[in-house]
Structure formats: C-alpha cells, structure tokens
Amino acid sequence: MRRFLAGGGAALLLAGAGFFIWTGLAQNDDDPVPDAPAQSGSAATPAESPPRQPPSADERSREQRRFDRMDRDNDGRIAQAEFLLSRRRAFDRLDANHDGRLAFEEWALSASRRFAEADADHDASLSRAEFATTAPRRRPQTRQANCRC
Image (cartoon, rainbow, N blue to C red; front, side, top):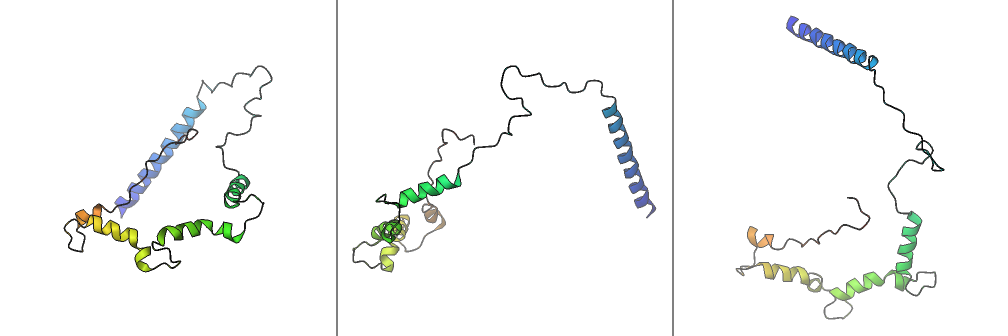
C-alpha cells in the first residue's frame, strides 16, 4: 500500500513540476508572434472577411431539381403517372413476358442467371470460389472537377 501511495505522490510531483516549467517557459518567450501586415487597397481585412466554409448544396435548389426531373410535361404539377414512372419502368424491365404480372421467376431472373453463370461445375450449388464470382461489380469512382477529396 505504501508503494502505491508513494507512486501516486511521485506522479503528482512530476506533473506539478512539468506544469511550472511549462508556464515559466511561456512567460519568458521574447519572440511573440508578429502581427499580420496591413492590407493595402480596398480589400477586406481578414478580421472583416467571413469565415471560409466549404460550399454546400442549396436544399431548395436540390428539391427543385428533383421536382423538375419528376415533372415530365413541365406543367408545374406532378401527376400520379409521372410520380410512378420510374417504378413502372423498373417493373417493365422485370416483367419478361409483359403480361402485367410479376412472377417470382421473372423477379429473380437476373439472380438465377448469375447463379447459373457462377456454377461452373453445374452441381446446383456454389463453392466459395464460385460464389466469389457473383460479387457485384463496383463502378470506378471518378473525381468531380470541383471535388477536393
């Protein structure tokens, strides 16, 4: 128990000594940071300029763009048919026999094709190596012109 108390006391003494040394060095600093040079001309001084913030998308303009994409006939209103157009196109791509009904086989057609292509030994099951070939292909990410990622 004495060793524990002695260790704690020694740690406090070291921390206190470090603090006093640090404050003493800060007070004896003969070379303070120089003031910024005065700006000439009519440009705003750094104290008057607004803080630099990264550009952000205007929520209203983003929402307006989304509205404009949905409003196909540009009448300023979105009809139900316009609202459901993207869903209709997705459904039509899946409805292989175009009967207006989506069977499970039609819904799972692309997955079934991927399974059949990956099943190299045609045993109706995928090994680890065969399953690895079904991983989705990732699009290469291109940097936008104004992006500083």
